Image 1 (spheres, rainbow, N blue to C red):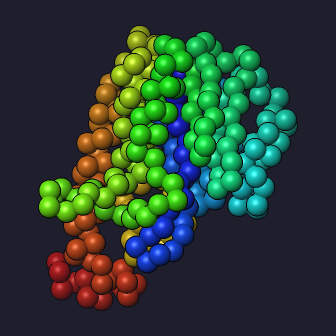
Image 2: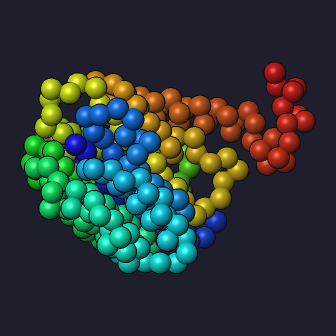
Length: 258
C-alpha cells in the first residue's frame, strides 16, 4: 500500500565541517502515512510499512543512537516480531543499509538496496515504481561533497546554483515513482505523503521545510510540493526577521517588529 525511500548523505558545510543527513519520503493510498511510516533523526532513517509496526521505527532509531549498525538493529527487531512475514522495513545509517520484505506482503511488493539508499513498496503496479524512485534520487544525490543544507537553490542565473535541499529532492523521487504507476489501488482516492529530513549540523533555526506531511488528499505529492515551496518561503522570511532573536535565544527585541 506504500512506497518509500530512505537515504543517507555525507557532506561538508560552508564552514568546512563534515556532517551527515538522513531522509525518508513516503506516499500511500491511505490517510496520514506521515504518522506511521517515516522515522528520522541525526543517527539514521527508517521506514516501516505494509502491515505497519511503528515500534520497528521507534526502536530502530533508539538502537542506532546506541551505536548499533542499521542492519543489526533492524534484523534484531524483525527476529523478535511475530508479524515479520507481513512487514516491510528498510533504512540507512552512516555506514550501511538494510531492507526487508516479508513473504506475506501483498503483490507487487519488493525492495532494493544501493549505496546510501534503500527503496521498498507493496501493492504497487510493478517493480518500475521503485526503479524510477531510486533513479530520480540518484540523479541528484549528494555524498562527500560541499553542499549547504539550508536555503533553496539560487534562482539568480548569474550565480552558480546550489544543490536543492534533500527534502525537495526526495519529493522529486516520489513523484517519479508515482508517474510510472505507484500504488495500484485506484479505488482509494484519498492518499497521503510525507517527507522528513534530519542532519548532524546545527542551525540557528532548523529548516521548517524538513518535516512536512499531507494527511488526506487526492493529489498528495503535488500538494506536498506546494507546501514545501510555501515552507521554504516562510523559513526565509522568518530568518530575515527573527534571526537575531534566535541567535540570542530571546524575544526581547522581537516586540519591536510587531
